[in-house]
Image 1 (cartoon, rainbow, N blue to C red):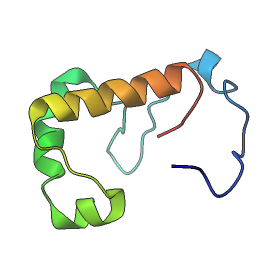
Image 2: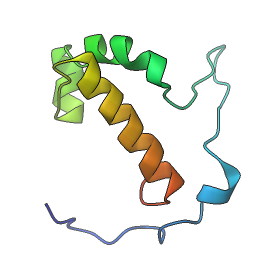
Image 3: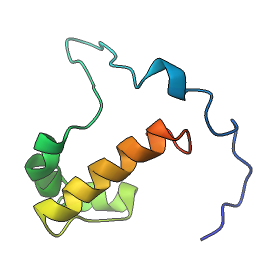
Length: 81
């Protein structure tokens, strides 16, 4: 599926610094980890999450694959999530 707009950044400029963790209102968002897969699978069952993410995870293995893909895309500089 093609993008309708050009990328804002060329691939790679965020890669050297690693994916950040940010403190916000007492919570610390962090990159997904493989051990998050069971919780992610449950979250993707929520219709509101499906509405805004346009996907679902039908198994823990699918959730784990989603996490792996996000980490790979960050590492190779092709996407930021």
